[in-house]
Image 1: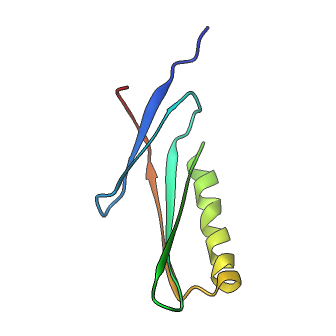
Image 2 (image 1 turned 60 degrees about the horizontal axis):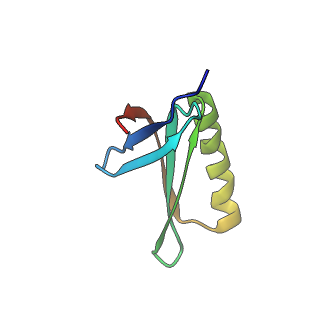
Image 3 (image 1 turned 30 degrees about the vertical axis):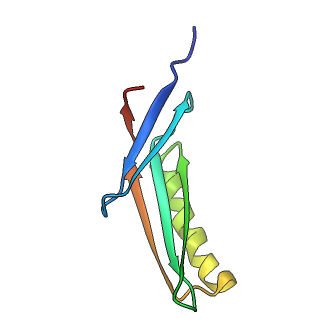
Length: 86
């Protein structure tokens, strides 16, 4: 049986839309960290996971990154991915 290739879309609360694909992976959630650096600039880190629990683990890692990278602050968000037509 051939696995269907599909596109997955994440729509963040601020309206940013990220499309992933085409993929056959079973990703369910998208996460994003927007970090504010000491100089006021921002860095964005993102990824996708196969479960909400896996995405939540990234939040703990972000807390460690504050110390390692010297961030002033950060916002961490998780949204569910939705399948979109190819």
